[in-house]
Image (cartoon, rainbow, N blue to C red; front, side, top):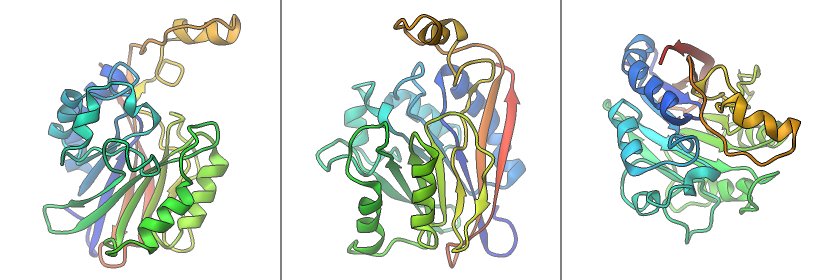
Length: 269
């Protein structure tokens, strides 16, 4: 149930890494929803399939566990079986600033059990990433120039490499969306805050994946990239999993955020 005062509590879960991350979500999320009184759960699922990509069956597993909307990023295309699935009505997004001809969609409106509407938007940065359309002008078109206005509650997953680009989009959208939460780098940042216009912001939520790893992958498969400059095939690490998420309280009428907090859970897999 929503907290008192007419607010919705929205949870955004950081990049889910492989089977360990998926198991952590399926085991913890049902109780986490009850414990924190979560109304909406969004999770970035682009690394769910062995660390790179997403398949329809894995998406359905996350949705069955209590995820309401799955967002993604540049790795959404790594498993070709997802292409047709993205064109269905299932709540799985690819970044909005890919060409219109790409499979899928970049935003949707989620309807809560209590009748509230939440716009979930997925965008991707361009610095050290694919050279897509500008996320700034693409979101301008959606927020300010769309045929129909979006509901007041608007959550943006900004899948982006560098913190300055994430910072810039947060300030650019301040007062126009309820939250801008960063994904992609898998390392949680310590800058969760409310911007002056009422937008909750964090540069990166972090990952939901093996704790004793290099951004979710085993030391043995990553270190040679740095020590020997040799190509290696990354493998998802084993061991305890850290679930990282941001919980945002949003006024259901105005769409302004009133709080943001990081949530971490250590899960033995």
